Length: 425
Image (cartoon, rainbow, N blue to C red; front, side, top):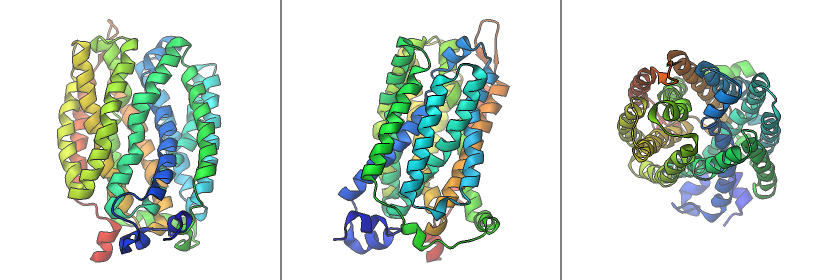
């Protein structure tokens, strides 16, 4: 049996795994790598997610409007998108472990900058810096998944990595909100800085060198690399899918906490229970969806989950004052199915590109994803308003747009093909 480093350096490890050296279940040596990837993805997701339940505090402390809060959320994604685009031109030239460590160090420093920001304008700058590192960091996580996990187990692995969303909601957000209620909005960012430093140390000690993709890499002019990636119709379908997926989710997600407090009747102290319930449910359902995706096909499972997700999207965005339990139950369904769509969708996207281009492609994909999420937030913020009573208006229209975007996503998955399917043809 080959040692862990030899196997992980096999580049597209399917050559080793498909021949029977590695069983269908996730081998033990992969779990340590997946654990690191979950930790990295956790701090990235929590850093983005913590902005949403802190929305009422930001609006109160900085005296900002819903569009200004939408910009505070979207500046992170725009910065991530721009930096991800340029990183994609060079990212496949280096050991993935080294790149991941550099990104984690920069991200931790940027998070500390957020905690120390004295004003709204400086917080905007800090969020832009955090996005510059965080967006590429997220892309690198999924590039590593694509490199070391064969396609027939990629759905389950993607579900495992994306369970970081659930952990962030179940563990991270309640702790962050507790710290913010105990102190102020800066406390969660100090907490994230400490987690970031510990993750850097763990990545350095546990993750083996990941240079297998370099065997397939061919030095090329950045313009030729752009042409190679963006002239492929299958790649364009993948980019279109992630764009619509962002509009189907992030037009709604950043404003849920604001809407629940302003319109539905929840208090800021109820928000930790909202995110805890949704995160706890998705912790189990994300991995379950990943397993079903491997068994029945990513495309089929995505279609089913996407259709079901339309119902909680419309319920959440049209909700009036209801008991807290009913509001939490509805948002939990929203998180299960809206986040659940990402598992088969990301598995499809990861599989759509050949190994030698995967790092660049996933960085471009992250760039497109982040910019699309920012545009979705800005669009929703520009549509919504605030009544004289302090309630948010026009959230129902945003929900309808998200539902239509979901239907378009289903159509796009029918056109997307994996790299392995292309070879078979």
